[in-house]
Structure formats: structure tokens, C-alpha cells
Amino acid sequence: MRIPIIAGNWKMNTTVAEAAKLVQEMLPGLQAVSKVERVVCPPFVSLTTVAPLLQGTEVKLGAQNLYWEAKGAFTGEVSPTMLQGLCQYVIIGHSERRQFFGETDETVNLKIKAALAHGLLPIVCVGENLAQNEAGETVSFIASQIKGGLAGLSAEQVRGLVIAYEPIWAIGTGKAATADGANSVIASAIRNTIAKLYNKTTAAAVRVQYGGSVKPDNIAEFMSQPEIDGALVGGASLKASDFVAIARLSAEAKGLS
Ligand code: 13P
Image (cartoon, rainbow, N blue to C red):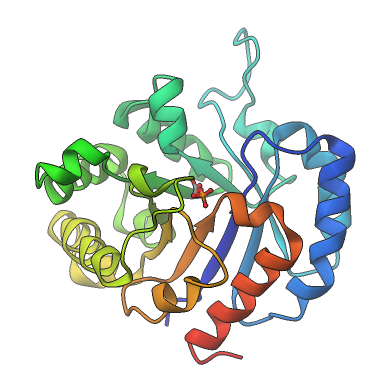
């Protein structure tokens, strides 16, 4: 069985002091939801402050990005060796990175390989924009993102990935995808592509999250879908009570509370 995973992507929000306060606010509530995996992804500069606050809890820490080289003359970048031992997860290829910072399926692929080589678990983001969605290109576009992003990975490596399906038009807009719409994109574009590239067992083992305007009032519907194993939450992960509610309602929807 795939263990549900709820991750909060704080994006470029919170100072170090605010990050510490936010994580302390949500910790008691998050700890009470023990049957789903819970991850917080604060900005890089807060990781060393948040990590000790999570010690002794089951709440995991994630970074929002990484560079693929281990060290060297790459001013401003953060390497997998710096993150190793500090956090467990790393978000890779978020649509904002692709859109504003020129990331491609090729760089996503390099980052996934670097993360895995250093024991970091990637949360790999894919998703179509509005024009692609309206042109009926969703499935073919996401299939190509999966193919490019996962190139050269073994079935065993793929089984351990978390993939986040985040339609770009649903991010930060308040207009979430429909739950059954997201479920069918995940089935036809993500699991089906992985089944073709690898095999059905691998496709069935990968955990897939939905992301895009997830809130306490719509999470249960997403989590009731058979192909959806969790959520990558942006805005609502910045409010402790909302993020805790999302984790709790996810466990309930999967019959795990
Ligand atoms: P929102 O939940 O704010 O729509 O953001 C989703 C997202 O991009 C998470 O990575």
C-alpha cells in the first residue's frame, strides 16, 4: 500500500524567525496525524533552524530545489551534499522553477539523479499550463515531462519517487482541478507512462500527489480518488491550522485515522 504524503511548499515565504514560529505552531497537530507522511519545505535559509525543531518527531523536512553538482564554482547554488543529512526530501522541477528559472526536463533529470545519489527523496513536479490544457495536450505533455525527467533511472529508483501533478492553471489561483479530472490525468499521463517505460508494478508503487489550490475544504475529495496519494500544498501550508487540517482530513479520507 502507498503511504499518503502531505507536503507543504512554503515557496519564497517566511523569514527564519517566522519559519521557526510556523513550524512550532503546526507541530503538535501534525504529530497527531501519524498515518500519513508529513513534510514541510521551508526556504533554504531556514532549514538549519527548522531541522532541530523536527528532531524526535515524525515530521520530515524538505528543500525546494538543489543543484546537481556536489560542490564548486556555482555561485548562489545549493548542492546535494549540503542538503544530505539536513533534510529527507527535495522538491524538483516545480513549475515556478521551470517558468522563471529556465529549468527543463534535462535539468530536472540531472537534479533527480543528484538527489538520489545523495540519499535525498525527490518530489518531482509535472503539470500542464492553461493553453496546453485547453488544446487537449495535457496527457501528451505530461508524458513527455515524465519521460525526460526520469530518463536513465532504474525501476527501483522510480518506485521510490514522489511525483506531484500540479496543473499550472490551478496553482495559487483558487481554481483547483476537479478531483476526478486530476485522478484521470494521473492514471493516463503519469502511471500509464511509467508502466510503459518500466512496468505495472513500478507504476503502481510510485506515490503521486495533487497540487494546486489545495485547501481544507477540497482535500477530502482529492484524497478519495484511488490514484491520488497526497498533496503538495502551497498557500494553505503557510497557515498552521489549515495545513494540520489538510493532513488530518487526508488520513480520514484514506480510512487511516
Ligand atoms: P497553491 O497551493 O498555493 O495553489 O500552490 C501549489 C503549489 O505550487 C505547491 O507546490
